[in-house]
Image (cartoon, rainbow, N blue to C red; front, side, top):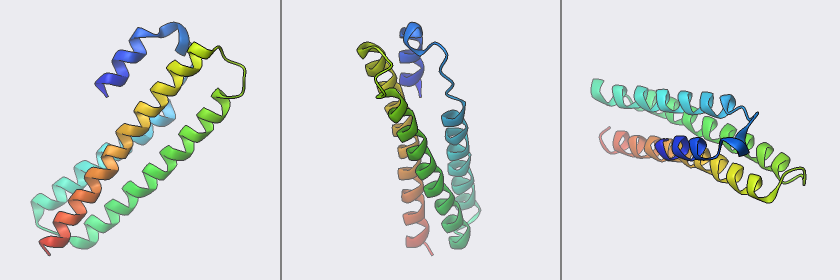
Length: 117
C-alpha cells in the first residue's frame, strides 16, 4: 500500500480526476476479512467460519479483478497519452496486487485451519 501511495504522490498530473474509492473499499473489506480470519484462529479453529470468510475473500478478489478490467478497458480506449496510460496502469496493477496478497493470506489461513481441525 505504501508503494501505491508513493507512486500516486509522484504523478499527480496523470491521476487528476481519478477516483480510487471502489478499489479502496474492496481493499478495506479484504483486509477486514483477513482480520476476522486471524481473530477466528485465535479463538480456536472454527473451520466453517474460516471457509465462509475465505469464500468472501475469494469473492472480493474476483470483484477487484473485474473492477481493474473495466479501468483498463477505459484506459486503453485511445483517449489518453502514453505516459498517462503507463502511470495509471501501474497504479491499477498495484491495487490489484494488494488484494491478491490478501487472497493469498486468506488461503494460508484456510490451510492452517484445515491442518488443525
